[in-house]
Length: 305
Image (tube, rainbow, N blue to C red; front, side, top):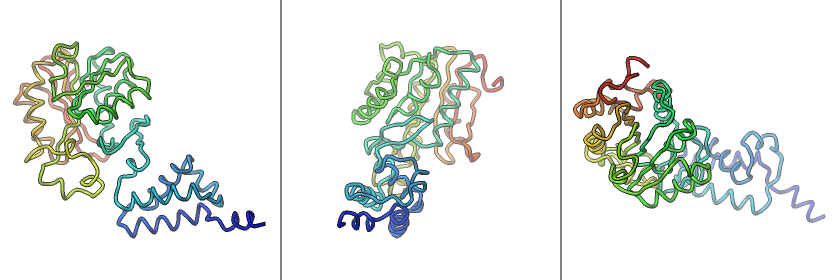
């Protein structure tokens, strides 16, 4: 009798969602309802829609305790992806934590641009170098889209490469995506990737002074090493442009993600380095999110795609 009574009195999903949404909103979380749903679905190992299909399901104490812990961390403005330890990117499931930046949907247009341009060139076995790979999202997504590609994913952070290594392994890409630690082009020296068909990167591009003013989810939790682009945010573009042209094959190009308002400056940096047919790549909102620069004389350059 006592057991039945306690089950009846146990909090149900719909009530818990209502209260947790209000709790997150009071703590400044703008996407309170969505985050409450995502966190609860993660704790219960359910799809979000099942929270409503099973709206009258009670939570057992261990589930409730796990959800409370997740809510507390989110209320401290820890990103949802760090709370759950996972993030979807290009329909692939990546492990993430505070050692790496969280993959963003905006970056998907960079991956799509690389894949589509290689397809237009008829290149199905490219050598691709991903500088500053972080979680490995860009490299793994390109590999998934181009099974014949060989990729070298590099990062100066050994901690980041541990996360990338776990993702490469869990996605079954160990024979196609290789990892190396080092600064910019240094890991390619003496390898088959010393001359590459594609250099792709989402480099640090936030001006140093702007980092403290970013949303708490970013400024408090994401690695500053992967954010800080120097005084004007363009330091890494200059360094990449300086070394890229001499390392591209005759069918090669550079594809770089850029921050808001940086496309023109990055295009000028690449042009000054000798790259041609500069292409701005827009995201789904119409904002320029990446820039592509081609090696001189590459067949299938911007005008032919």
